[in-house]
Length: 324
Ligand SMILES: [Zn+2]
Ligand SMILES: [Zn+2]
Image (tube, rainbow, N blue to C red; front, side, top):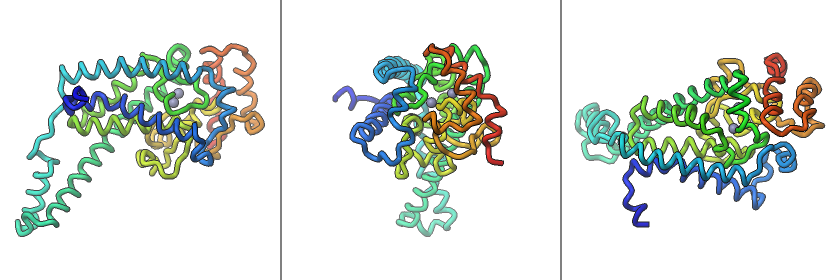
């Protein structure tokens, strides 16, 4: 415990993805184990067992190795390049807003509760806008790299198909990625977002924790109405169902974004049809049955069969299923 107490804020920020991943996974696994909120579950567990091409034990083992390596590297990184310390009187600090608002009010309110409340409100809005900006940069990078992953045959077959071994994902499956993808996509995206906006160490910790927990939630197949993480993107229509559709066979070429629906909508890759998961064979729409047979016909449960799923879902089929 003394070791934990001795950590700096920057070191806590470096630890935050691993800690929030563990907390988020534990929370959703508890719901699943004790069958809490079953009415909000998107996909029956039987389907998960039938479709998924990797065991939960293998995913946990991968996550342990992944977080051990990335956390060690992050701790070394913050030691070499410490994140910015927040400036006490710079633009955006509490004292900056206090001085500005007091000047605006003609200094009459100095020291009052009203001034303190207004200053904190301004500061919260400022910090919220910065978090939103970081998420938007993060989501933009992830959208385009994810889009590339599905349209470059080599990359999909050898790299991204690893994540798509989870046809029906679960919370801790969010970290089940090829190492090359984790590095080129996730690490670069988080550095672009936090470096681009020059987030302080505390802001970085909050941003990385929220991003990790939201990613866990995206993979839960739970669409909880009271989740606090749904505030990131959920208000704009991005729910865990959005990413669950991307993991289903027929949804591989849609819903590439991770936090907001906008890039998918702007680029015409959003699945805007009936928001329902069709994994059960009897629920597969007639126009998609042919495409599902492509990989079902192969007995292989490897990257090739997953790549077949990716290639066989033609863009035209995606478009057919959109509501105009
Ligand atoms: Zn994908
Ligand atoms: Zn995923």
